[in-house]
Image (tube, rainbow, N blue to C red; front, side, top):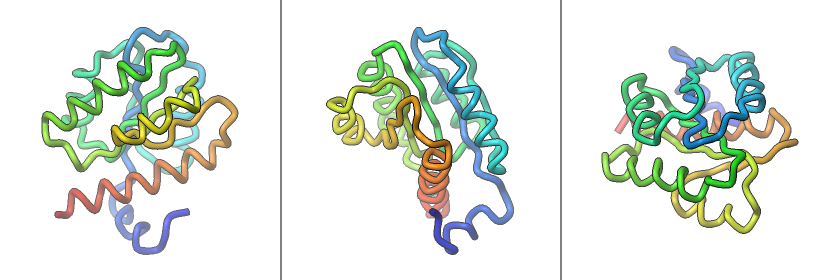
Length: 148
């Protein structure tokens, strides 16, 4: 759960999260459930739609001034596509947007994704409250970076 200091960061402006399914993955049921859950939790939700390129994800995130990019993949390409998004963020010097992953991600891939700065990496069946709390915590971190 987010502490009182972090809650102050969200006083005037709700958390803004971009949901993205980069790469070739047309399964959007889970991401639509997340969109509703984030909205119901008071977040502003943007959905990049199906099949955006990593470049489109980053451009949208920057142009819309989001706190968190939440990516989902179910096709097994997470190590390639999530890595590309993280690399683009580093190349462009974006350190004030948090990156969260999810989908069908094998446990053995999660440590590598974490090294890339992609946290969460939740799979099907994860309680929505767990994901919401994680995104809220990451948004607090992003907001602190924006204040620097």
